[in-house]
Image (cartoon, rainbow, N blue to C red; front, side, top):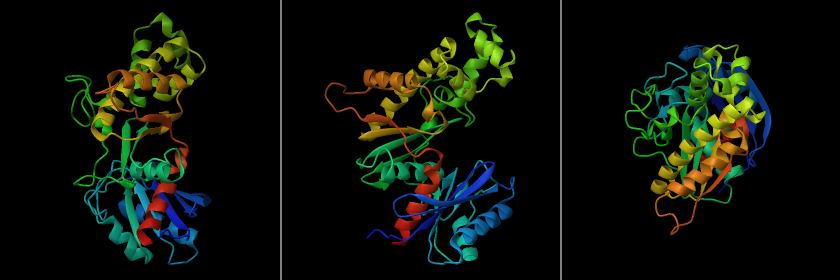
Length: 319
């Protein structure tokens, strides 16, 4: 039975920790934040406790969901690895529960965002969903049968590290040719920087925007110029869309979802990105012509999705 009580969602980012009071309909009624203590685990946990106590006003029955980038173990009691903090196989859930005196649900931030889209956003009518988070890399989550699928070890959804170009660009994970090296903000920035570095005349707007400094080119700069109609940047967006569509066809071939939801910082990129991605996905999906195509759509909840999803998962766990 779904509880109607409010719950608290916490989203730990690289620069700030957001916390929000969320009602049973997924609406945020109050939101506060604290700067993320740089690489200081005890200080980060104290900040989480202070934010929760401020939001809850001492009401111990209010459940808490904490979302963070990284890998959680199968029962979500420990953070195995977090890129933002020095959490390395840490019993974070138990420590927070001890300090707060209430139930805490620990969840990967992409899983939280995907759950929010499933419950309150773009995928409300679909039980089998793949959610992609496009930013500096590619993250994501899987909802199967109306439940978050986390795999045997708890770390399913590392979509960005499927290898699609053997011997391709080196990835930070140590492998080559990972999907996120071709369909992410970092990939756009790298390709834009190459245009600037080559002094290409077609990149005159991009060169002017970055002061002819390749190191100043970012994925956000490329997407902004593309949205303004710059042809060179629009070409880069279209090329990324082809790689995005290829990766989506791989995921759909394996998981057969009813919908693929695309969010994250690049989820609001020019329409051409999703148009090209869907076209290429339809051209490369295995069994095309004999199976339905999964719908591809933009996420609806924006940067609040992680907060909303973490809070709702905590509410579900405590019901």
